[in-house]
Every structure is written in C-alpha cells, then in structure tokens.
Image 1: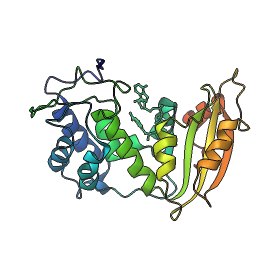
Image 2 (image 1 turned 120 degrees about the horizontal axis):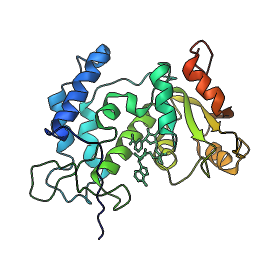
Image 3 (image 1 turned 180 degrees about the vertical axis):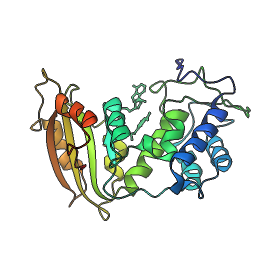
Image 4 (image 1 turned 90 degrees about the vertical axis):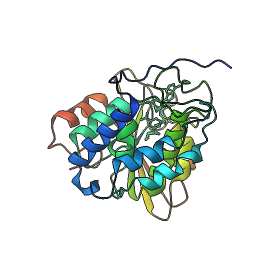
Length: 252
Ligand code: ZNA
C-alpha cells in the first residue's frame, strides 16, 4: 500500500485541535444565531472519536455520524450553493453575497476546510502530516468526513438549490465527483423544488448547457426536482463579485 504525504495547511505549533477550536469560536462570533446551540469542546470530542486510534485507511463514513449530530445549525431554504471543480469561484461568490452558502460557509465545513488529519492504531493523537492523500485509499479520515458532511448538507437542502460548474473542465458534471455521487444522491425531493446549474465559461471554452453531462445531471436529480442550466461568462461572474447591485445566481 502506497500512502502519500499530504501537507495540508501549515498549522500553528499547537496543531489541528487548537486550529479547529479556534475556527469554531470564530464562527460563533461571526454567526451569533448558531452560538448558543454549539459547544466547541463537545464538537471536538465528537470529531476525534471518528478516527483516533484507527488505521488511517479504515475510517468509515458513518464514524462521523456522532459529529453530525453534535453540530446544530439549520440550513436555510433557497441558499445552498454546491460546487464541483469550482471551489475558489464559489467561495469568492459567497464571501461577497450572503444570499448563498456553500458547505464551507456552515460551521461544520468552516471548521475543517483545507485541513488534513489522521491518527494510527492504539494512538490517542491527531496528526496533520504523513496522512493518506485523497486518493491513496478510499476510507481515509478526510475523505470520509467530506462525504458525510456533503451528504448531510444535501439531505437538508430545501426550496431552490444552485450548483456552480466550470466549462473549463471536461465533463463539467462528473458522476465520479462528490457533487454527483454524494450530494445529488442525497437530495430530498420532498423538501427540494428545483436545482439551477450555473456553468461558468471562460472565453475559449466551447462547452455549454447542451453538454451531455448536463443532461446526465438533469436525469440524476430526483423526480419532480425542476432543473435549469445557465451559461455564465467568467467576466459576468467577476462583475457579480464587484458590483453587488447586479442580480446574480438568483441573488438580488
Ligand atoms: N471543502 C472541501 O475540501 C470539500 C468539499 C471536499 C470534498 C467535498 N466537498 C463538498 S462536495 C462541497 O460541498 C462541494 O459541493 C462538493 C464538491 O466536491 P466534488 O464535486 O468532488 O468537487 P471537486 O472539486 O472534485 O473536489 C472538492 C474538493 O475535494 C477539492 O477542493 C479537494 O479538497 C478535494 N479533492 C477532490 N478530489 C481530490 C481532492 N483532493 C486531493 N486529490 C483529489 N484527487
């Protein structure tokens, strides 16, 4: 078994625990509405029990169920923005426009974005280096976390959902992605009405909303979830970031 080295974010000497606790407290200050229901120390304990003392290629997705239950945050209808191969664009957008939120704008995603963590058998420690990379083995602690957190966000998404896709990657909708294999699969048709795909197109991109992969996305959605696709030139997208009076991605 080849286990790669993923460096993750450069951490303060105190490590993953203090980074996560600090992010949790920062989030609570920025979002007073989630403050009273969430105890950062309890969240840390629920988080680490998922993977401490385990082989770092043997952390099942369900091990994060306790963490999911420990984090209390209501997902507001019409706000979810999924993304696939467009992380930086999606986060630039939600940083400027509070009408949409990605997984990384929720408490759970905010605490763990860009971090790497793992443990080892018979250890009580959390490490942030020499952990398996995303594709080294399927059941690594980081990937299992994002699968579980993504499934939870999708299952709670109500009203109208959006997804930001890039015409610069082929295909823009990939059935191997977490967006397809986890998020689309976990949407709840009894609370979700519609999904709009925004395909960001750079000047030389030839892919448009007629791409076969977008037909696949439409067909992968649960029955009765209405689908639409809009091409969005990158220049228009950048305009959305600078001119906040311009309506974009359904935000006014
Ligand atoms: N914040 C995250 O790191 C993250 C968020 C990781 C995985 C999933 N998510 C969810 S799913 C988020 O809410 C998005 O809506 C969905 C995006 O997942 P995707 O469709 O699989 O898109 P992607 O761009 O291929 O991957 C998303 C992220 O996963 C990347 O930014 C990386 O952090 C990680 N990743 C995916 N593939 C690899 C990888 N990291 C290293 N090597 C890879 N081959």
